Image (cartoon, rainbow, N blue to C red; front, side):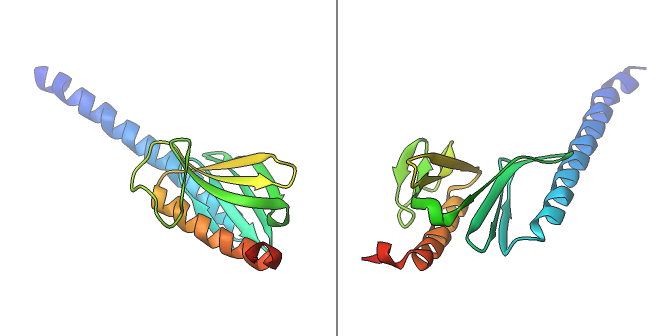
Length: 143
């Protein structure tokens, strides 16, 4: 009987891990179907992001699907900044680690849209890419 009691926590842990894996798979499947409509997209546990032409759509993944989807145009964006621990850092010279990682989009109405990321290099690469797209859309910002 003691052996059974010793194995019980391990059995519970196994079923909990299987359940968590199933939930993550459901999130990934919902993202995969959603991402087919975009030219470029990203998934992580904090947010999904899709780019189609000059429009960015982002939201939060859940096992039941994506929620809080919002769309904005890069034509309305004046500046893209990388925030690590609520401090602006350069996308070319960024710290390797941070707790709060976000890409911030400053729009022409002086509003701020912040999209969370799990890794600094991933956010920096997206920041570089989107800045390139933004400069291609607004060549007068290049001067």
